Length: 307
Image (cartoon, rainbow, N blue to C red):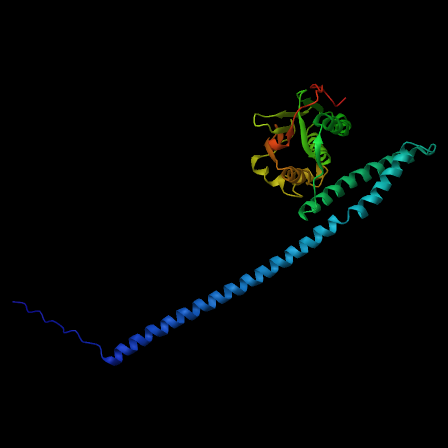
């Protein structure tokens, strides 16, 4: 027979119980102290980050306000260069004499116009960021606005060998919008489409009013296109899809971001669709409240406006 000897449980002494409780108290205080130190460190880090963010915002605000206020100082001398070079190109006060001067004056004129476009884009973006853009809204004749934009774009399209096609119904209503900003939107998108379309390609402008009564402008091209993952990037300021594009195609990368901002100021939106090597379509949709009838009949048929 196997006997099992049981060990008797020994009750802890008061001193042992006190030591155990004291140990738990000490550990709890250590944990609380560590937690407090971590909280204080997190608060200090948050305060440093907030101060840095405020300083960055103040610096950015100062930059955008400076640029927004520089419109006159930057544009006036450039307009003088462009204006006087135009006078010399046209020889309004007699011939220049040396034939080489004609080429120099033409280069001065084109360089001035190009630089003015870049400055205008940068200043527009600065004004948008500073909240200083205000719309001058009025009832706008879309057909006449399109005619004006096509005159601006047609020479460049003809030189590039790109066909400009227009598809607009003759009974369009009026659009309540900032006419100058609408022209800028269309010129930005049309010139962008022409720029990225090879010779013998096409750029088409289509305008309609959808079932919801919204004005829809669509600029499509048969150009180089973009990959789907690049569509969001090109909406960011100063972004070129690829480094090689910035060398081959002139521009600041501000046309699309500015166009999107102008559309948002009108309560509308800009949508992009593109396929690499196939082409790009930019769609601008204005809210229905900006559509106003009755309309004045116009005739603007689908035709080649590149010459």
